[in-house]
Image (cartoon, rainbow, N blue to C red; front, side):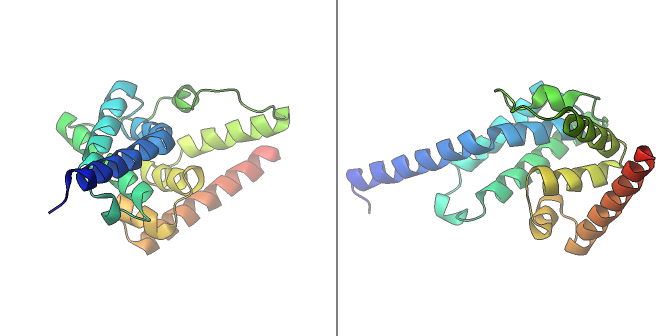
Length: 179
């Protein structure tokens, strides 16, 4: 049986664990949930809040080393639950990504780089939803194929195929746009 001092230390460790996760992952989870929910920022906030509430119920030692993957998986599942409840899927509104970006000054970029980034975002928005999701999980959030597989419940080979197909299409369309 734990002493009161031990219980206090465990609560403090758990609180610090959750606070750290909120600080580091709230903005990426909010962007991800908003995309899944068709740009509905209010519902995305609810989903992310519910994700962190569920995190508080988890012992930190069970999530050691894969807390980010766990958060994205729970967030995705919760967002899909919301969509199933609504009975409809919405496409992401154009320009929603920029409105959801984390606050703060953006470093100066060359005009050409900004134009290229915008062109790539527009091309990604034209990809099928499943390709958009894996591309954003891979390149925006830095997940491995295996982590994406666990988050999306797709096989690793299917994730690889979707990413390969999407990147090939993006390259072709970027090359055609330069001509």
